[in-house]
Each structure stands twice: as C-alpha cells, then as structure tokens.
View 1 (cartoon, rainbow, N blue to C red):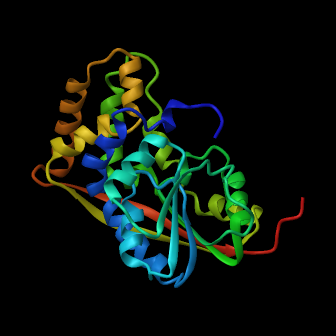
View 2 (view 1 turned 90 degrees about the vertical axis):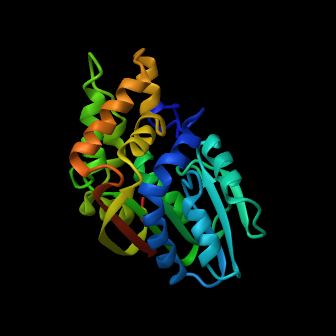
View 3 (view 1 turned 135 degrees about the vertical axis):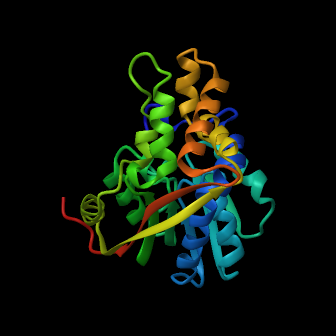
Length: 277
C-alpha cells in the first residue's frame, strides 16, 4: 500500500487490544473453519498467509496442517506482526515476514497455496493484490480467503458504527465501513478473473459470535482497531464511547454473554491462464 492511511494502521496499543478483545470473539471461530478448508487443499509444500494480523489463523494452520507444509505468515503492519509472533511462540515451520499484498517480496512461483482471513478488504487495489498472489503461486496453486459480508449482516458492526459516529460533531469516521466494503460476489469473481484466476467459488458462512460480556467486546471495538486514531484525532474521550458502545451491544445482543449474528464470504480460486494485457 502507498499512503499510510490511518484506517489501515494497526499500530501502537491497537494490536494488543485487538488480540485480547476482538480475536477470540470475531476471528477465532472463522479461523477454525478456514484452517480446516486449507488442510483439505494442501498436504505438503509452501503456504503463504497474507494479512495475518495477530496470528489467530496462523496458529490454527500450524496446529492443523500436515508437518510437510511450510508456512510464511505476512502482514503490512509490523505491530500486528510482532504481536502475532509473541502470541504464537516458536515454531520450526513458521516464518514471519512484513509484506504489502500489492507488492509481495517473494520470487515468482514460490508458493503452492495462499490464504488470507479478513485482510483483503483493506487493500486499495484488489486486482493488483490478486495479480501478485497469482505471480507468487506455482502452477495449480490455490488462493483461499475470507471477507466480511455486508455490515447489515454483522450486528456487532451495524450497532457499533452509528454509536461511535454519534460522538463526532462533523463527518463520521470511516473505519467501520471499510472492513465490510468487499462483499459483492460478482465484483470479487470479476477481480479474480482479471488477475488470471479460475474455478472461483464463493460460499456464505453464517455464525453466532459470542463475547463474555458486552463491555469486553466494546473495549475492543473502540480501542482495538484504527477507529481509535479517529477518536483521538478528534480530541474525544475514549471511556464515554466505550460505555455507549457497551450499552448499545447490551440492548441489541444481551450481556454476559453478548451474542451477534455474523456472516462472511469464503472465496477460493486456482491459478489459470495469465490475463492478456
């Protein structure tokens, strides 16, 4: 990526808050599902994970995949990568690399499979990222990734976004729109085809996500992602916003536990004939 857009900066205290409050609730259930899917597609060789975040999928892949699979976990945000390494601990087959999805620092035909969980929504140029994925994949290689469905299908975000926005006197912050912006199956399939992928399959996955309490998830929803930058830049106090989000969560999904219906898309494709320029 080019400009350091604050909507994609998971830095400072954000990675730790993200790992503590958001990962167990929002990402771990989908990581379990995605790791099982990947295990059915690769038995040996080299796997690249793009946008590994704090490593929840990486840890599941390490625990699930055959030992003949070597894993390279990458992320654009070095703070997230450092947190992922600390969370994962030592592994003889996992390597950690900073990497921009639109300019991967790997030679052509390095990997047998690529996976990404809830990361490609943040990439400005999807086709460029898919072309890079195709470049570093070997013939017959696979790309599998997940993206969130519409914000309306994910109650936690549909509740959180307007609650936080109500504290801003001017233009509302944009972050909570971004993760839920890449959900059109036709657009996804078209972008993959333009990058030279074939056999595109898109499946909708629904889950009921559960947090220990509304307050715990609210803490992560406010301080565990780049919305925290916008709050601080606007000179707003964090605690009243956390309390308001916790109340909104409680009203919409209960408390101790808080539950949120959720929906995502899981996309798979294989390397095809290179597109003509």
